[in-house]
Image (cartoon, rainbow over all chains, first blue to last red; front, side):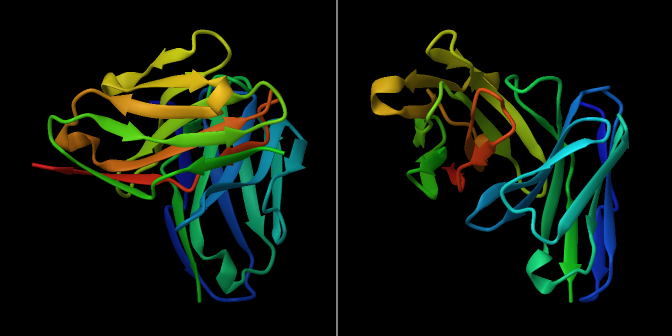
Length: 112
Length: 113
Protein backbone atom coordinates (compact mmCIF):
# COMPACT_ATOMS: atom_id res chain seq x y z
CA UNK A 1 0.00 0.00 0.00
CA UNK A 2 1.10 3.55 -0.71
CA UNK A 3 2.39 5.35 2.36
CA UNK A 4 -0.37 7.83 2.99
CA UNK A 5 -1.90 8.73 6.33
CA UNK A 6 -4.59 11.12 7.42
CA UNK A 7 -5.08 12.76 10.79
CA UNK A 8 -7.26 12.89 12.69
CA UNK A 9 -9.28 9.85 11.61
CA UNK A 10 -12.39 11.08 13.39
CA UNK A 11 -13.38 14.53 14.56
CA UNK A 12 -16.49 16.09 16.02
CA UNK A 13 -16.62 19.85 16.13
CA UNK A 14 -19.10 22.67 16.45
CA UNK A 15 -20.41 25.06 13.84
CA UNK A 16 -18.18 28.09 13.41
CA UNK A 17 -14.95 26.53 14.64
CA UNK A 18 -11.86 26.17 12.44
CA UNK A 19 -10.75 22.67 11.54
CA UNK A 20 -7.55 21.45 9.91
CA UNK A 21 -7.12 18.00 8.42
CA UNK A 22 -3.69 16.68 7.61
CA UNK A 23 -2.53 14.37 4.84
CA UNK A 24 0.97 12.96 5.01
CA UNK A 25 2.73 10.85 2.37
CA UNK A 26 6.02 9.00 2.32
CA UNK A 27 6.00 8.28 -1.44
CA UNK A 28 7.44 11.61 -2.63
CA UNK A 29 4.59 11.92 -5.14
CA UNK A 30 4.16 15.29 -6.77
CA UNK A 31 0.36 15.42 -6.86
CA UNK A 32 -1.95 15.49 -3.87
CA UNK A 33 -5.74 15.82 -3.68
CA UNK A 34 -8.51 16.36 -1.17
CA UNK A 35 -11.96 14.87 -1.77
CA UNK A 36 -15.16 14.67 0.18
CA UNK A 37 -17.47 11.67 0.00
CA UNK A 38 -21.18 12.01 0.54
CA UNK A 39 -23.93 9.44 -0.11
CA UNK A 40 -25.15 9.56 -3.69
CA UNK A 41 -22.35 11.83 -4.87
CA UNK A 42 -19.33 9.58 -5.09
CA UNK A 43 -16.20 11.59 -4.36
CA UNK A 44 -15.92 15.25 -5.22
CA UNK A 45 -12.64 17.07 -5.60
CA UNK A 46 -12.14 19.97 -3.18
CA UNK A 47 -8.59 21.11 -3.95
CA UNK A 48 -5.49 19.65 -5.46
CA UNK A 49 -1.77 20.37 -5.46
CA UNK A 50 0.73 19.87 -8.26
CA UNK A 51 3.80 20.83 -6.25
CA UNK A 52 4.99 22.62 -3.14
CA UNK A 53 3.02 25.86 -2.80
CA UNK A 54 1.15 25.06 -6.05
CA UNK A 55 -2.54 24.44 -5.45
CA UNK A 56 -5.81 24.95 -7.26
CA UNK A 57 -9.53 24.63 -6.71
CA UNK A 58 -11.61 21.61 -7.49
CA UNK A 59 -15.31 21.11 -7.95
CA UNK A 60 -16.46 21.99 -4.40
CA UNK A 61 -13.86 24.38 -3.00
CA UNK A 62 -16.12 26.97 -1.32
CA UNK A 63 -15.47 27.11 2.42
CA UNK A 64 -12.16 25.24 2.17
CA UNK A 65 -8.55 26.29 1.86
CA UNK A 66 -5.38 24.24 1.49
CA UNK A 67 -1.67 24.61 1.98
CA UNK A 68 1.35 22.61 0.93
CA UNK A 69 4.63 23.81 2.36
CA UNK A 70 6.41 20.46 2.01
CA UNK A 71 6.15 17.68 -0.54
CA UNK A 72 4.88 15.22 2.05
CA UNK A 73 2.15 17.29 3.70
CA UNK A 74 -1.12 18.67 2.35
CA UNK A 75 -3.41 20.45 4.79
CA UNK A 76 -7.12 21.08 4.35
CA UNK A 77 -8.64 23.87 6.46
CA UNK A 78 -12.27 24.65 7.10
CA UNK A 79 -12.08 28.26 8.25
CA UNK A 80 -15.49 28.20 9.92
CA UNK A 81 -17.08 24.77 9.86
CA UNK A 82 -20.73 24.37 8.88
CA UNK A 83 -23.06 21.40 9.20
CA UNK A 84 -22.99 20.98 5.40
CA UNK A 85 -19.30 20.11 5.72
CA UNK A 86 -20.10 16.98 7.69
CA UNK A 87 -18.60 14.32 5.47
CA UNK A 88 -15.84 11.80 5.02
CA UNK A 89 -12.69 13.41 3.66
CA UNK A 90 -10.16 11.50 1.62
CA UNK A 91 -6.68 12.51 0.64
CA UNK A 92 -5.08 11.02 -2.45
CA UNK A 93 -1.66 11.11 -4.06
CA UNK A 94 -0.36 10.35 -7.51
CA UNK A 95 2.97 10.20 -9.24
CA UNK A 96 1.57 11.69 -12.43
CA UNK A 97 -1.83 12.71 -13.78
CA UNK A 98 -2.72 9.58 -15.74
CA UNK A 99 -1.72 6.50 -13.70
CA UNK A 100 -4.40 6.66 -11.05
CA UNK A 101 -4.41 7.85 -7.49
CA UNK A 102 -3.71 6.20 -4.14
CA UNK A 103 -6.10 7.04 -1.34
CA UNK A 104 -5.67 7.51 2.36
CA UNK A 105 -7.95 5.85 4.93
CA UNK A 106 -10.23 8.88 5.29
CA UNK A 107 -11.28 11.28 8.04
CA UNK A 108 -14.83 11.28 9.30
CA UNK A 109 -15.79 14.84 10.24
CA UNK A 110 -19.00 15.71 12.06
CA UNK A 111 -20.01 19.34 12.47
CA UNK A 112 -22.74 19.84 15.07
CA UNK B 1 -17.23 19.16 -19.87
CA UNK B 2 -16.71 15.76 -18.35
CA UNK B 3 -19.27 13.57 -16.68
CA UNK B 4 -19.66 9.99 -15.54
CA UNK B 5 -22.87 8.02 -15.19
CA UNK B 6 -22.97 4.71 -13.40
CA UNK B 7 -26.14 3.18 -14.65
CA UNK B 8 -26.97 1.07 -11.60
CA UNK B 9 -26.82 2.22 -8.00
CA UNK B 10 -27.09 -1.38 -6.77
CA UNK B 11 -26.28 -4.72 -8.39
CA UNK B 12 -26.93 -8.07 -6.78
CA UNK B 13 -25.41 -11.34 -8.04
CA UNK B 14 -24.98 -14.85 -6.73
CA UNK B 15 -21.53 -16.16 -5.91
CA UNK B 16 -19.95 -17.77 -8.96
CA UNK B 17 -22.03 -15.81 -11.50
CA UNK B 18 -20.74 -13.02 -13.76
CA UNK B 19 -20.56 -9.41 -12.66
CA UNK B 20 -21.36 -6.43 -14.91
CA UNK B 21 -21.14 -2.87 -13.60
CA UNK B 22 -22.00 -0.27 -16.21
CA UNK B 23 -20.38 3.10 -16.74
CA UNK B 24 -20.92 5.72 -19.43
CA UNK B 25 -18.77 8.81 -19.70
CA UNK B 26 -18.64 12.11 -21.47
CA UNK B 27 -15.39 13.89 -22.20
CA UNK B 28 -14.25 16.58 -24.59
CA UNK B 29 -10.78 15.10 -24.76
CA UNK B 30 -9.22 11.69 -24.93
CA UNK B 31 -10.04 10.58 -21.44
CA UNK B 32 -8.26 8.51 -18.87
CA UNK B 33 -10.72 6.13 -17.24
CA UNK B 34 -10.47 4.24 -13.99
CA UNK B 35 -12.39 1.88 -11.77
CA UNK B 36 -11.91 2.01 -8.01
CA UNK B 37 -13.29 -0.27 -5.31
CA UNK B 38 -14.20 0.72 -1.76
CA UNK B 39 -14.85 -1.91 0.87
CA UNK B 40 -16.95 -0.85 3.89
CA UNK B 41 -15.25 1.75 6.06
CA UNK B 42 -12.11 1.61 3.94
CA UNK B 43 -10.33 3.88 1.52
CA UNK B 44 -10.46 3.46 -2.23
CA UNK B 45 -8.28 1.03 -4.17
CA UNK B 46 -7.44 1.29 -7.85
CA UNK B 47 -8.83 -1.72 -9.76
CA UNK B 48 -7.76 -0.83 -13.27
CA UNK B 49 -7.12 2.05 -15.64
CA UNK B 50 -7.46 2.90 -19.32
CA UNK B 51 -5.06 5.45 -20.75
CA UNK B 52 -5.37 5.03 -24.55
CA UNK B 53 -3.43 1.81 -24.89
CA UNK B 54 -5.32 -1.49 -25.25
CA UNK B 55 -9.09 -1.11 -25.15
CA UNK B 56 -9.51 -4.22 -22.99
CA UNK B 57 -7.95 -3.54 -19.65
CA UNK B 58 -7.21 -6.18 -17.04
CA UNK B 59 -7.11 -5.27 -13.39
CA UNK B 60 -6.67 -6.86 -10.03
CA UNK B 61 -8.81 -9.66 -8.55
CA UNK B 62 -9.96 -10.91 -11.96
CA UNK B 63 -11.75 -7.73 -13.02
CA UNK B 64 -11.51 -6.27 -16.49
CA UNK B 65 -13.08 -3.41 -18.41
CA UNK B 66 -13.49 -2.58 -22.07
CA UNK B 67 -13.23 0.93 -23.45
CA UNK B 68 -15.77 1.46 -26.24
CA UNK B 69 -15.39 4.90 -27.73
CA UNK B 70 -18.38 4.57 -30.05
CA UNK B 71 -20.63 3.82 -27.07
CA UNK B 72 -18.75 6.09 -24.62
CA UNK B 73 -18.76 3.20 -22.20
CA UNK B 74 -16.29 1.60 -19.83
CA UNK B 75 -18.13 -1.30 -18.24
CA UNK B 76 -16.51 -3.41 -15.51
CA UNK B 77 -16.84 -7.18 -15.64
CA UNK B 78 -15.75 -10.28 -13.79
CA UNK B 79 -16.51 -13.84 -14.92
CA UNK B 80 -17.26 -15.25 -11.49
CA UNK B 81 -18.21 -13.26 -8.40
CA UNK B 82 -16.71 -14.00 -5.02
CA UNK B 83 -18.14 -13.01 -1.65
CA UNK B 84 -15.13 -10.76 -1.10
CA UNK B 85 -16.16 -8.68 -4.15
CA UNK B 86 -19.04 -7.16 -2.21
CA UNK B 87 -18.17 -3.47 -2.09
CA UNK B 88 -18.86 -0.15 -3.75
CA UNK B 89 -17.34 0.50 -7.15
CA UNK B 90 -16.61 3.87 -8.68
CA UNK B 91 -16.04 4.72 -12.32
CA UNK B 92 -13.80 7.76 -12.79
CA UNK B 93 -12.90 9.96 -15.75
CA UNK B 94 -10.14 12.52 -15.95
CA UNK B 95 -9.02 14.74 -18.75
CA UNK B 96 -5.59 14.58 -20.28
CA UNK B 97 -4.26 16.86 -17.55
CA UNK B 98 -5.65 14.58 -14.91
CA UNK B 99 -6.56 17.19 -12.34
CA UNK B 100 -10.24 17.45 -13.03
CA UNK B 101 -11.14 14.01 -11.85
CA UNK B 102 -14.85 13.21 -11.93
CA UNK B 103 -16.25 10.29 -9.95
CA UNK B 104 -19.45 8.48 -10.70
CA UNK B 105 -21.98 8.16 -7.89
CA UNK B 106 -20.97 4.56 -7.29
CA UNK B 107 -22.48 1.10 -7.70
CA UNK B 108 -22.89 -1.08 -4.66
CA UNK B 109 -22.32 -4.74 -5.46
CA UNK B 110 -24.02 -7.37 -3.32
CA UNK B 111 -22.91 -11.00 -3.60
CA UNK B 112 -25.29 -13.69 -2.38
CA UNK B 113 -24.08 -17.08 -1.19
